[in-house]
Length: 171
Image (cartoon, rainbow, N blue to C red):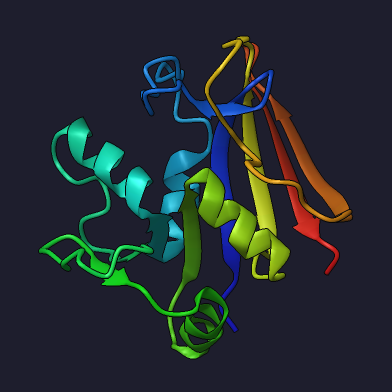
């Protein structure tokens, strides 16, 4: 069965973006394991606000991967990049896991991450913590979650000060 992996970066104070959604603070001087991770996924899932932010980056970065955008706005239309999903997250992801393929990348955003974690839909978390304090922004975890246990499976440090932690969710 395919795994759902939350591969995401945050500031040291746990923000995944500035209040505007901008991620101009992310380090781009090294690969930080992205290429290897990206090669292991063929499907990306994200929330509508994250999708709208991704579209401001220029060329769509997930070409060649099946993209699903979860939305609570039924008026949103699928486009050349992504299929919009307005159905129950759990049922959709449970079905998606059964389809042959590589792993599934939960790209973000904060509200969708909460839904996935609260419904036990995330198998792994790879968190790249950037050595910057933003002071405000969009938090990694937007709403209160129940106690969730994780098992550390890896820790990588980089010369830039970035620390990448890998965890398995204990369910």
